[in-house]
Image (cartoon, rainbow, N blue to C red; front, side, top):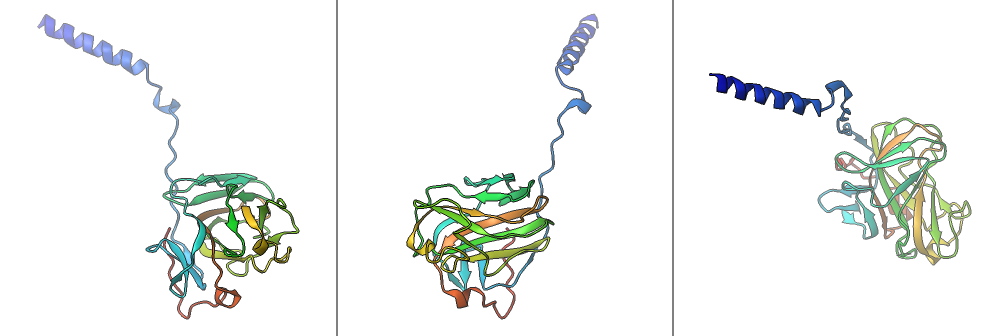
Length: 231
């Protein structure tokens, strides 16, 4: 009996010493639950994302992409100045606009033929309200950096409401400023501006630079609203 009690006492002492090495429950760092994107309402548009084909399409025909980012657990090199750009849960790029005039930039070295690929598509869902939607897109080439002299505004899909999913469509053959500069250049980097002020939030699902079917096709919505993929 005494040997049994001795072994039990030693075991209790070991457990007590082990517990001393662990922080108290109130001192342990809390683990934040993963954020889940709520059900979103898609806007009826000519261009949609086809999850099965992993491509943007118009009238059932995929648009050939020179670059496509899908943010599957990674920022894929995109950086947000004036806020945070984080991998979303389970996928996507979560944007938190923390200061005025936030700017989302792609990686450099895209080497895109602007004549062939003159359509930029940004599929996003607004998750938090923001002030003063901007929606401009800028770009860099070997001949110039970002400048108000070379920019475009959306031809479709601008300023989504909270929980609304849109494809923001930029026809770079019709710049707001810059004439035919995009089409006569090799594109090194793109920059997308969302809201012009702090506070807003988005999940960006995909960004693509694709071939351009022409201005009439871009804004002709389908006869029946199309349900976009959930991600």
